[in-house]
Structure formats: structure tokens, C-alpha cells
Length: 99
Picture 1 (tube, rainbow, N blue to C red):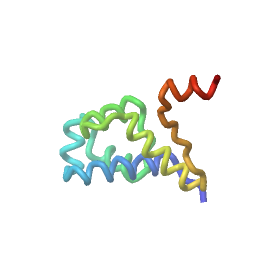
Picture 2 (cartoon, rainbow, N blue to C red; picture 1 turned 90 degrees about the horizontal axis):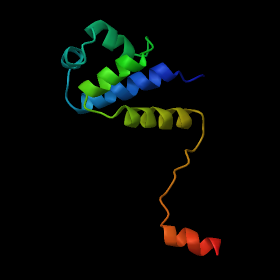
Picture 3 (cartoon, helix red, strand yellow; picture 1 turned 180 degrees about the vertical axis):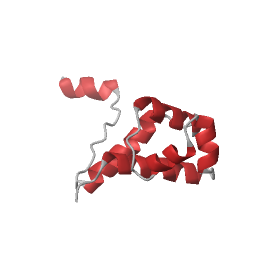
Picture 4 (tube, rainbow, N blue to C red; picture 1 turned 60 degrees about the horizontal axis):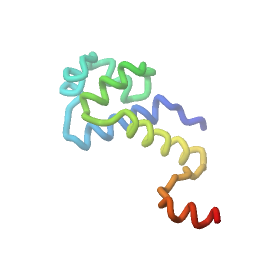
């Protein structure tokens, strides 16, 4: 079964909203998005534009980049992939290995 981006995105937004103890009505008012449309986005029935996503993330006080990271992780998991994580490497380790 194919995992749809809009469903994963909706699930992440819903989970984050519920974790904050917020209602659809509160978030829709803060984001200036209709209650019905926000509900459809959360259920994965509507594709959210980048402007709408930014507004919803702003209302939830979440960085859009973090929401996208969460969605990406979920998509990779559903595809059976492991995400690679870039770890910071101190510059003295890099220069020592290059010598």
C-alpha cells in the first residue's frame, strides 16, 4: 500500500495539536483557516499549500522544518528505509583523519 504524503502530514499535525491539548477550533482561528478545511488537512483528505502549512505551523508554534522532518521520518519508515543522520564531527577529527 502506498503511503500518501498528505496523510502523514495530517497525522503529524493532528498529533502535535493534540499533544498541546488544543482543539481544531482554536488552531483554525489562530491560523485563519476554516475549521472544516483544517479538519480535512488533518485527515489527509486535502493537500495543504505551503502558505497554509506555514500558517498552521505558526498557530501550533512549530517550525515547519520540524514538521517536515517528522513527516519524512514516517515516510521513510513506511517505505522500509532508515534515515541517515548527519552527526557533527569536530574539525580536529576531520583534519587528523585527512593527514
